[in-house]
Image (cartoon, rainbow, N blue to C red; front, side, top):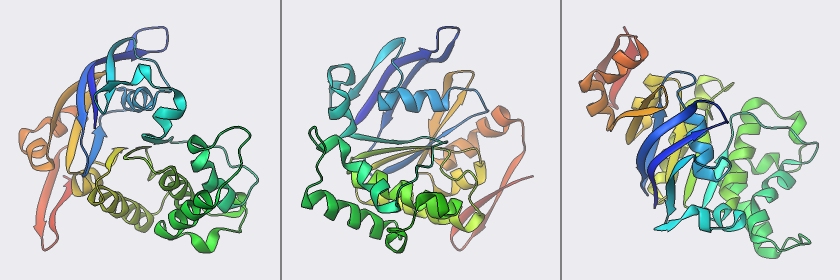
Length: 251
């Protein structure tokens, strides 16, 4: 369980995140929503320990995150940034990087690390990519490998910043359905998404931000009914009921 208590953060100038309090719940896909530059990505970095808060604190299982070492925090929280370098290594070696928080120096992979890497690749439907260089993979294939690396890290909280970027619609749907599957395993999954329609379709709960502040949290039904999304994004939003539930669209 991760709790954000009155988090503020910035990069030396005006605060990018201001007084945000939010709980990340096990068994839930939480989507951070808001216009570009509203602080969503910065908030993820604060949770992951990559950006120190200017105020407030992050609690991890009731303990201040500031008291945890980077290694201890990495055993509890996985962070997938929006942009990543593409190293000249195989997909399997890339996934093994997810085991770094559990290794002492010098890093020597144990049988359990190799087992975790294979299990993660299989779970991400990427085992057939294991021996291929990451640089030769398509965007969708690379995303599967990065997701497998996150799974190999074996944490209860997974943060993903714009994970659907550059993916075709089928890969987007697959990734978001997989996020729901991870939540059903009891993990807390936090996504930054710009596509409101996909976010409302797959999220259990959304958090709407604007200019660094948290405006409202709630279920997709609550956010849609309140009108906060149309107001914040200045875009009319509508929906239609289908056999699979509500489908949202821009009006």
